[in-house]
Length: 413
Ligand code: AMP
Ligand code: MG
Image 1 (tube, protein in one colour):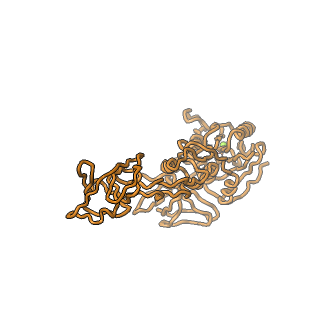
Image 2 (cartoon, rainbow, N blue to C red):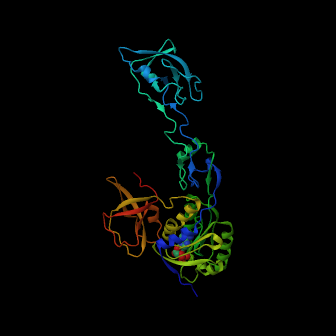
Image 3 (cartoon, rainbow, N blue to C red):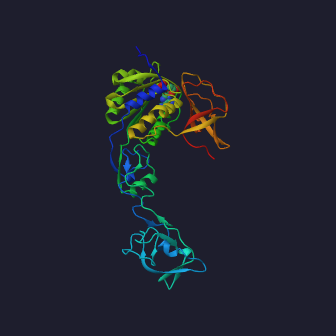
């Protein structure tokens, strides 16, 4: 007695998955551990950047009005009465007719309003005075307090994937820690009596398990940590038991294969024993059949067995969920506009994910299917740069049409 799968569009399936994927509670972590992770709370600047007016050059801090008449024929000589360096401010206020030596990053001495770089003046009497042959604009070569960041502004918004540059900005603002969600704990269980480890010799009727290593890597790349990555025999009782154990220690449990209508499909037979899981028939290709549920508030995905289907369902549903658990605002791979290098068959009423090779031509990315779209084949997936998305409402696409693709990697130049 097999349950009837629920029929869903890709958009409906995605909506259900994302509704069940609640971001994991955030905690403070050192910025050294934040690279590539999602910022969970807006970072509001507690002060301006730069924090004070400072010199952009090594030179002289001057009062622009003192140099107003300077020309090659009538140079202006100004006595130098102090020095300001980075970290060593000049504690005096300069009066008209005075200048100070000033180094890059030094606070602008009080009273002065411009910096003349060394190359635009000349030293006189050692460093006792400076000679100028040109006027200077007030404000020249001064980096103003707040011109990079103003106090109170949102320097980095929640949901942002943190780069080294973002974390440099956070450090400048005094944040030694930022709020992050922990890495989702993910179990990957593949099923199949026909499957071998990569190191095992082939025997009749057997193939090697390629989905387990692929998913383990995709999960890690998407920010997850593996709790389990193992293969199970086609034994429903064993699968049910292992999934229940995996649910205890994981935020997300992925099974591979064994979820279709065959006589030995152990995941499908185990669904009732696991509980709170539905069999889905999602109008997407590749990618059928699937099961999804939230047993004990954890996420369960019963992925199909064919390599292309596993990879596609991972990109279409699992990766967005893993990213949402971490608090990322951007859930998908980068979406890039591409043009079709050939006609593309597709059926309205179904979302197609086409494994495509990309090529630069006259400044645009052109997409060509990377081999036959057979869900058991591995080479198209290996050659593909992107998954071209043919939305549900689109039928056949024609050469030259524009489309959107999920970028897996850039084509070689
Ligand atoms: P199933 O849904 O278990 O019937 O699997 C569908 C197809 O995918 C079969 O041809 C399986 O041999 C193949 N398959 C299932 N799991 C894996 C795996 N982990 N690695 C490679 N191929 C697999
Ligand atoms: Mg199987």
